[in-house]
Length: 493
Image 1 (cartoon, rainbow, N blue to C red):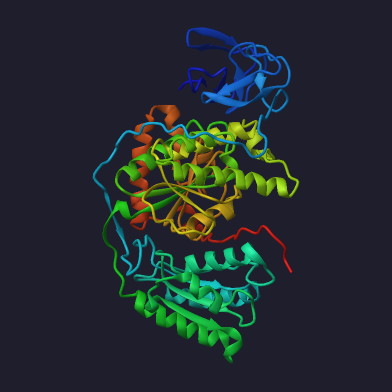
Image 2: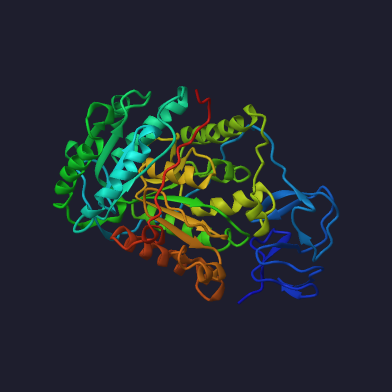
């Protein structure tokens, strides 16, 4: 196993692949580098002397500016490196050529639906329209656990605090997210549970649902019935009886829509887990399937890479708005666009937002961008899509599910247990994390450092995703962790 890696030929820093002690002599491209201090795993060291004010290059791109002279072999981190990011920018479309990597689609065992893609789960979902009925939804889910079995993979309630006292975009976004979840392919049955006097009630949400299978959706306004638990159970039993007729059948992988997300990243995320996801994304989109990359603030500093991969000028302009609109969101609240990475990211070796973004966008692979989606907009264009959502793990993962993802791939260098409404595959950037948190982690990308090639790792991830799509449970499912979080931007009345 290598101790240290220079990621790109033009880089002037390298990354420790294991904890290294001061005085360690490293051989990098025929030159010796002696570490001047201890270097934790995932952290950077200078490969040559770096002058104050000079751009520091990693992944082949600037990740910030040196705030002091940095000698060769010194630790490069928050104490001597700062971001170069600023507000909204003007961009030029410089399209890059694309290789055609079409391949025959693999198959998985899924649940066909009358409308849209097949489901990878056949679950019964209880969706409260407003926070006032959250407890009712959870009580119904608890009572309905007896329905699980046979063709029913699970019964889940998804409480949230919204649905009333909202205005403008916030109100519409809540309606859209709930409408999209109510028509999600992983939900073989849905009970849309309302109060009756809320702003975003059943009558307001249904128009956002578009075409849906009426056999699979029931509606209940709790103010209109005498006993909401008794009535709710009756409706859930109706849905369950219909769902028991469902069977898994062979479906082509071009029907898969997979979300791409990372959280609790470390200095190895951009070397192991995220590039492996990128290989997976290229494989799936080559089969005609779809992937969706989100967390826009973690594209800042790497956005031009995505812009130049847009398949046409219209998508390029949409991507420009995607980036600049999110920067404006920060600035309109008098907040810096670069208030990132998190303390955990920094402890893992990530210094600036550019450093984080260049690692994060590795998840997109090398395929062209075929779609750019607004928050709560459903995916329609096959291939790689970009989705407007923040970096927050729960909010972004929920947004991916609401846009139609049947599974979310979630890379992490620090570890996290949560699950969104769909199977949430945790991909560890390093083997120590995968070994320590076996009850959280589904896939160990740290194997790249012990002999596997990146192509082998990406293909292995593809095989694992097909197994999950066919019914193999992820750790969040085994733990019973499912939740939603809706993006809130404005005023609460």
